Amino acid sequence: MIRKLVRQMLAAQILSALTVSVCLLIDNIMIGRYLGVKAIAAYGLANPVLLIIGAIGSMLAAGVQVVCSRSLGRGSQEETNAGYSSAIAITAVVSLSFMALVLLFRTPLAKAMGAEGDEILLKDTRDYLAGFIIGAPASMGALILVPFMQMAGKSGLLIAAVLGMTVTDIGLDILNVTVLHGGMFGMGLASSLSYYVAMVMGAFYFLSKRSVFKFSTKRVSRKKIGELFTGGVPAAFNMVSSVILIFCMNKLLLSVGGAVAVAAYTVVMTLGNASNCISTGTGGVALTLSGILFNEEDQTGLKVLLGLLVRRAVALGLAAGALLIGFAPFLVGLFIPEAGESQHMAIFGVRLFALGLLPCCINNALKSSYQGVGRVRATEVISLLEGAGLPLLSAFVLSRFMGITGAWFFFFAGELLTLIGILGYVCIKYRRLTIKTEDVLLLPDGFGVPREDLLEADISHMGDVMATSHAAEAFCRTHGGSSGLCWRVALFVEEMGSNIVTHGFDPQADNHLSMRLQHKDGRWTLRFRDDCGAFDPVHYVPAEGQEAGMGIRIVLSMADEVRYTYSMNLNNLMVVKGDI
Image 1 (cartoon, rainbow, N blue to C red):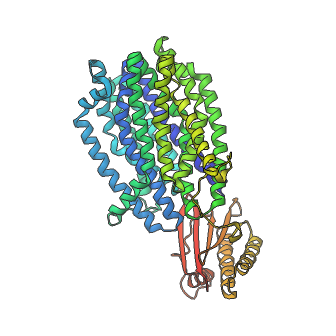
Image 2: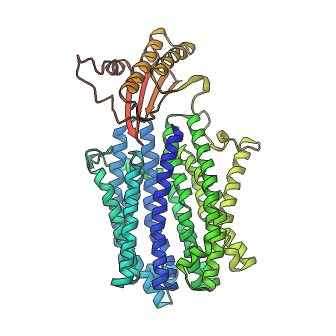
Image 3: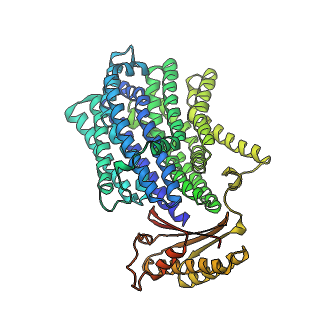
């Protein structure tokens, strides 16, 4: 079932990240072809300021993935709704405040970014800041809704919203440069309006009765907001590192190559970010699923997840890198059509960037997995080293020996050194050369349960249900369970399993049901997970006296605790029974 989830979620995450990148790519093509190289440089200089709102949004989105995936893993829908309500509320407050500040201080901000001394560059930078920041509430809101769409299993809606944003942005860009002639302000405003389109499309689901998540001002709390920010701190490190990297690289390139070098760097980062959708998608899937599996203490599932993501990251990273190297002249020509120094630098920089895609994809899978399993400090350190420290160090040192040519090694050298550092730390920790998945995961000591205290089974028909019920009873007996307890656990498996297979499985579909039974600290925890239609046995129970639902009522009356959540198009049921 993990394989199916990874396949579905990874495709949606990559496609949505790619579409957003394509949106920015189209912006840059329009700017370069219609407004010139200095306009591209202005876009690059404005980026650090714009990335701040992206950093805050990404921080909260990552916090949502961490906090809400954990509450889903614990089976608490009420706690998840509290996270949803708090995320929406704080997003509105922060984004509106940031928009007002940037609009008020856009001129000094443009000067601080390096646009001072060139009136055209200053005007273009200031105008783009003004146009783009109007969309801050929508861009930040869209970032927050993405993880909730994934958890609700609405990958199709996510893709539709992002596609709607892209089409709107392209249409408005064309309108701006051919009819309205709104310059850089118009380009920024086109992006802003496209973000509002995406947010509105997503809002139709979240405001409907079908929404898995329910907003309520009563659920908004300082505690939950604090948890969201704390959970998203590693993502903030990553985004802040990106801001520092772009700001420092702009300064470095301005000093050694002028505006043409900054324009080339902007093209490199635009194309690089589009190809980096693979690492972004990989990281998003790793963070969400590892958080759920970690809170279920599913060590086997975590190993399978990381192995799948790394293999896919390697394959996709190699493919994307090869395409970027081969088509670099054509792609750069879309932004900078005139042959010259800026175009030459951009082609060289794009090809070197492509070499870093493979280690980047692996690094993102590892970094997000560490955050999901509670290794927050490791995630923060990797984010700082990968995002700014090692790339800037590489660019600074190599540019001293190779001139501006050396600066273009920033991404490849930074990602490669980061991966070497991660694997080196793992080897030092375990005092041996190792790349085993269970070692690379860096799971906390004492995590999970020993294999002998765990029973797992995949169920596809009624025969499997009965076999698993008997296996559960035998498992309980070998672990010292009383006869009454063993009978109850076996009954739980039989009743809930048969109910899912009989009423949930579609004869025309390839449905899956997994059962996991673990014994730890005197508690027997059963987890059922299936990909059938949504069904909550905890709250939807027929009236007393009706034969339908009798087995469910028996389980609810005998169990100490029963929790249900529906996430990622999966029913998740947890049944807990203490020793008798």
